[in-house]
Length: 281
Image (cartoon, rainbow, N blue to C red):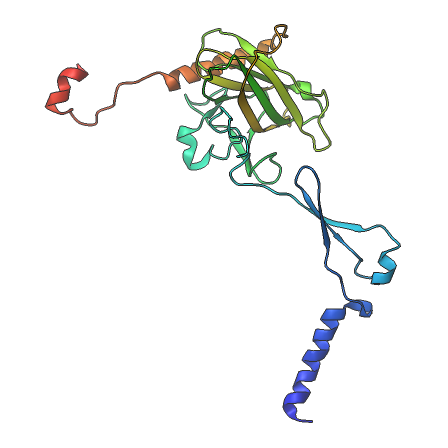
């Protein structure tokens, strides 16, 4: 036998060992299944130490769960009136133009804290509210008589009543605030509370307000996947009043909105041209 052929024998033996694995049986490729939420789960047909023939007599072994996330968020909702309903364009380099702001404010304009990763409900980014913190998101108006809001919120405790959600005018002074109730008093299996409801539409820009009603140190709330769409009706006429804490937070957020949305004259860094000086005066 030549020296070249004898050198290939160990490599060939290693290749066989990698192909057949321990016990002399090949490891079949995992099978994939997809549930209604879009999550894909891979299940090995046989365990590493069990022959393929014996695997048919036992239940498949769950190895991993794969979640599908789109970096553009819930783009399927083409009629969403919110400027950034799932926070994909909020924070970071775009924090100076974010359509979301928080209360209490450290400065005149504060963007919310952001969470990046698979814990969000849609996309890759979502907002986080600390204890007793509130958030407002700007949208646009509609000619329809109503607005329907859908929101997903993950409270720290399994109690959806620890969060308040409402819709109202962004910059109105003591104008109506319409609360949105949660579909269930308890979160779902993944810890998310879904808020959904139809409220009357206002005459100008609409805003969504969310408050963390808990003041516990570890009571952090995740907010994501908000969709505000036009509705052909104004909803029920009988509604509960928001909590006093939430109403106080809404007025603080509206104060920030009035500072943001009010028109301002252009800030000239140098004297304007001669033909424009009379107009500026």
